[in-house]
Amino acid sequence: MKQKVTKSAAAHRFFLFYAACVCAFAAGVIPARALDYTAVTDALGSLFGSAADANEGLTTFRSLNIPSGGKAEALGTAFTGLADDVGFFDYNPAASCLLVQTQAAVMHNAWIADSALETCAGTIRFNNLGLGAAVKCFYVPFTQYNLFGDRISGGYYSETTAILNVSYNFFSGYYFKGLAVGANIKASYRSVPDFADSKTNELLQGSGLGQSAFAVMADVGIMLRFNAAKRFASREPNLKIGIAVTNLGAAVTGFGTAGGAHIDDPLPTRIAFGISYRPIRPLTLTAEFRQPINLQNILLSQLCSGGIGVQLQVVSFFSVQAGFLIQGYNPRVSLGSMLSFKSIDVQINYTLDLTSSLNPLNRISLSAQLKLGDRGRAEQQRETDRLYAQALKLYAEGNLEMARSTLYALLVRDPSFDPAQRIIDEIEAALEMQRMIIDFQMLDTLPEQQAEQPPLPSSQ
Image (cartoon, helix red, strand yellow):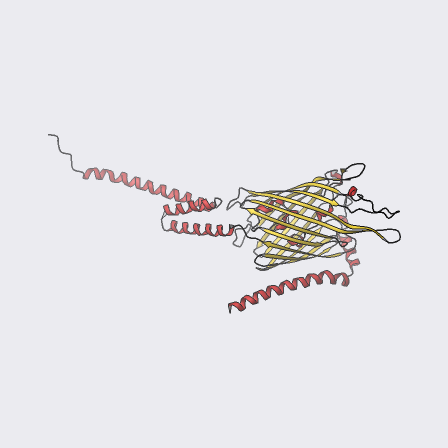
């Protein structure tokens, strides 16, 4: 009977995964033919017309704004205040020291005009220290034609970004979960293929290098976690607040040109404030506010933007997400589903994106996240709980010395377990009270003992 239940559960999970794939594909294909997008665009234009941004498109390395995919995109990219998986790199670098497990991920996001963004990322945590690395590559095919429609050159335009991350959770404890602080160091390279002379059709060697560019930048972020109106049992706080400043740096372009390299347009720097809240165990709400900053001319900064997201944990291995992002004239709506196995999470997203083109875009993104263990933290927590329960039992039985020894052993294993120190203080007070009572009893019995003693014999 047990074997049948196991097979049934596995079949159920496979069916959900297959259904999610089919629904995502159908959502990406059917609306493009079945809906009148002209009417949709006109309606959205009248609703969000005031959000049109005259400073849009003044920054370079725009691929830094493209979401890698995963849960973050499904939540409308409102992820700075949640950042609970390896997708944190683009949103809050402080999160790597808070992740439950070591993770490695591959992500694919199909973008506009046959372009795509591919991402490989990984992170590892050593107690309060988090480390991570990621590589993102955005690419789009490039083909040059002459006046007669003949192909005279081709290749790929690409922007590749490498990221190194470090974070640390300061003042971590049982009641106050600490202040997580983190930073990313990033380097990006824009590769432009060589193009041909339009008159002679001859390929100009090194011509693409003059338009290629290199950028160095940094991200910084913080994360705070609290409990607020929490109605379920969990050690993980249900309220998170994150603040991040991303893409602080500069780009240089014009390699190999006669005039030499020069500073490129500003990078898409921005400040983000995000919050996430779990009012009940299966439901997570996220919200985010962003303010772009033009570091070369603050007056040319883009308008602010914002997004919201919601996640519902349907069962332990299946969750759904939805998000809404307003950034400029047109919004972005996203839907996603995640199927969780023992060692892998698979995320499938569908996005109706009206932010990148006059024509609506139905996009699909996929991600797979490998869960590589927690380096024994869960086992350590179970052992901490066992020792604490044992100490409480000894304390209740009146065996204070043994209870104190057990709690000291617990603190050696987990110095941040504040309840153990609180009980030790109570035990110390109780032992001190016992010593005082014994001293008073000794003082009371001393005169009686002296009276009962026979008089000393006389020397005479």
